[in-house]
Amino acid sequence: MYRVVVAIVFCGFSIGQAFAASVTNADTSVQTIVVTEGSRKTELQVGAGETLEFCSSGCFVTFPNGDREALKGDETVEIKGDKASVK
Image 1 (cartoon, rainbow, N blue to C red):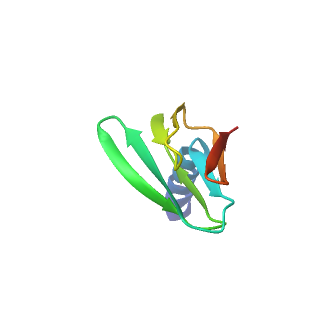
Image 2 (cartoon, rainbow, N blue to C red):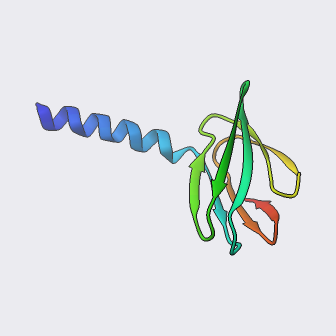
């Protein structure tokens, strides 16, 4: 019974993260993005070569160059040369 409960909980966490947007920093320096979900703003620092998951239910993102983008939560973002591309 314990194993079944653990498996269900683990699957629930896996499913929730499968629908999050991700950002990869392809630059050699730390980049900061501002994520706005509802009324909450969060600054995320993305290290060089690092990939982070965020925005599981839609958000607005302000990129290092000042561009803003609305995300649904399933996009892949790459920051390179201070510019972001959304796929």
